[in-house]
Image (tube, rainbow, N blue to C red; front, top):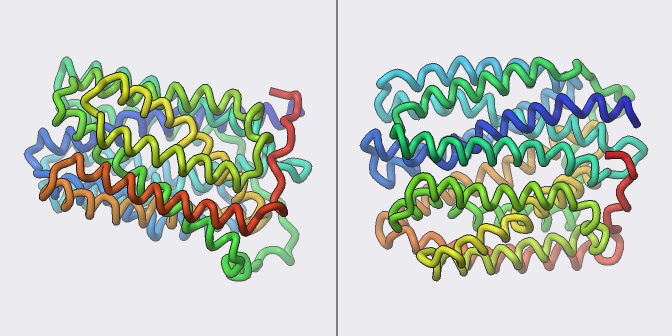
Length: 400
């Protein structure tokens, strides 16, 4: 439908700019903090602030957006407030002040993906079925944005050092703010009797409970990549440019997957894909733990990101759309962010920091390998709960 495609274009811009911001911020924040003189434990605490905001902010924003239907206006407020907070990074704040500045900034940025994903899921689910092709074609713009900034920022920081990190933050969040203000001011029209629809009956369903357990464990095993990967590679002697290249490899595979996923996703039920993603994560973490010093093995492990992140993300969004339709969509997305990214980020960041401080960074990846095995077991439970009731994603519609 041409009208839907036209409405999805601004979402592609938001995805590109937001993940462009994440593409340099998340990989290089630990290295900037290291240059400021912080130790491993302090770095892990400060990088965990982002995950800590995901314990409360997404559900609050999700509840408000479900109640009002004003997802776009709330996104505009969040992006503008985050941009203003980013300007504080130019100041010499000290660890406490920096932690507070990051806390305020992340409280607002943490609302962006749940609300934009909820609004976009509404558009790509017209007619009742989740359109994996449309979703993937929009979401791949985020991967392109991530790819560009992680590569360019790596080269920039290698040449100029980390002192320009605050400027990169402000410029990238300015792009996010501009793109959010270009979104169409859509408000979901939901019947009045749905306005107070409760989320607890859904959460009491066993398949939903196992889904959140599997998502929690899967992302917890991923924390070794999100928080410690750049530090691990830096400790192994990789240059900042090569660190950026290795991040870029994983994002290229995201793009390939998101572009072609409509061809592969119908071949297995969603719960089956959840098992495949977690089992692949087990392989990826094991390779990274044992052979990170071997470049070709590390490159192969990064290639697996296509399944461990991109496929897993699409499966989770589709399952959320299945279990949390209509007026529950915003809270479903928010719960996913809290359970699958908030708690794992805080727990993984803090425990990973203590573990690496005592036993070295490699130990984080062995721990991630063990957690991946638990995630695979939980995903099998999801498959058992759903099989054979949950269908595969439908074949993609022919429109791009």
